[in-house]
Length: 316
Image (cartoon, rainbow, N blue to C red; front, side, top):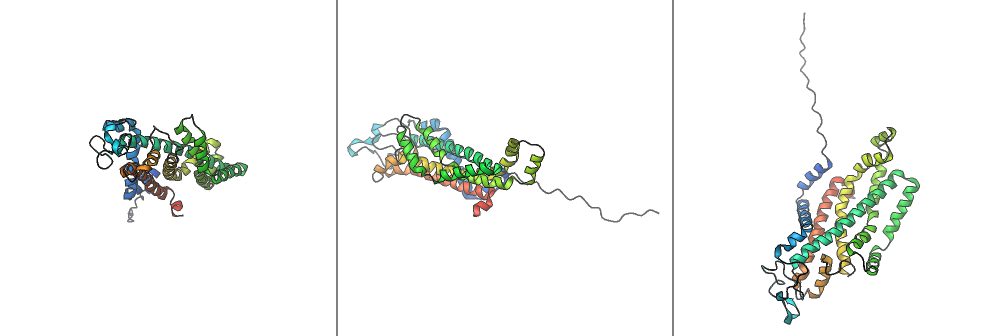
């Protein structure tokens, strides 16, 4: 006699959905934040402008160092002819007082200089800071002590005074390269501390111990197991470093120790516009608005990425 199994058939449970990659999580989070999307759009816009400055700056038909004496009135102290700082079909954002140089061309080329310095200095900060933080956190002991004291010493140093002194003393040098090196020299300890803390929490994880027991070299453990674990916070804090670098470059150029004429930069243009802010406010507003929008955009984007990659740090 045969019996039939009346028990209901059980189907295998579907596998749990795979966790999204950090980039997908970040993109999903950005889509839920209109302010972050606006910040990302502004960052991309100014990055494109900076990258294509020679082409975009020439769309108005003027070069940044080209004078247009017909656009200024010599009988009014060189003020621009026409309303809003000389805005016209020929000069889209007006002209610079006294010289008549086209503001659109100078702002576009100034974006290239300012963002180049900020991005290059940020790259130095991230590379040096990540390397120092990973080495200090992973090896510990005397290595950690020496690097930690070096971080403390660098952070306690009056960096702005040293920057002003170094930029004032150096004369026949590449000003852009010098600014990148000087700004990057004092910016790495902050991110190094973050990476050190992340590395301390990662180096005793099971997969890191398994890699060491399996005979993996130290370099392989650091590059394959430790660095991916600290990549998220590094990406988030990098976007927060960039606006500080932009502001530092603008401050040094504003104080007259940064980029020198005829090379344009936003900080230099703001410094020159101070003397005309009451008679030609547009000359002051155009570079100031560009600087404000760029810093604000990076800040909004950085806050969103920090909440994605490092939520505990964002709420601290």
